[in-house]
Length: 271
Image (tube, rainbow, N blue to C red; front, side):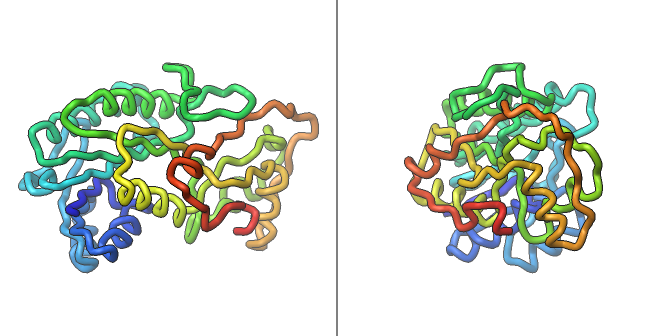
């Protein structure tokens, strides 16, 4: 296949290399001129592409000449109008896809789309406008816009917190005192499993579905983050003593049953 990856960052670049090694022709976008040469060196056809929020890219028509597009652009942080801005970015992309050869789209979303309610949450359990953060509301609007398009088929993957390689969870909370939510279970996923799930969706030609991408294990924060800190010889965080036990666990049942996916890193504690 010919696959375009919009966003060759921490996840997108190793995904591009993985799919390249599977003999797909890979086109990748970056916002950095310096990274263009890096992509070339990895035998990924590079495109300098920015969304500001409208598409800004010279000589990019060939980027959209693909069988499948992986859309991996999280909402920008620090904006007052993050929901509107991200939706304009997505609309700009949809406009470009319409009339192109792209038949399939995989949208990288996040478990931040779920409302801050306790209990186990699965893919149908979203409430428009009720995510904990504006970025979650922005992603949910983007998901709905993409899923209703007629000219291409969209599959959404809602990944949990990303970790692996140079992204060590120990750095998130090391040294902090009296952190709240110590009993809250972590909803994390290793980068290897992100790539594995995307690869499985491509190979099985899955279309029109939404999947949660989180590991099997959900240790509580007050167990996980101190252990991660100690493993790196960092000062462990401490947590508030009196903490509610009513917290959210994101279910991965659909990704394991529908895709038959088995996690390479099922328990974040092993990291």
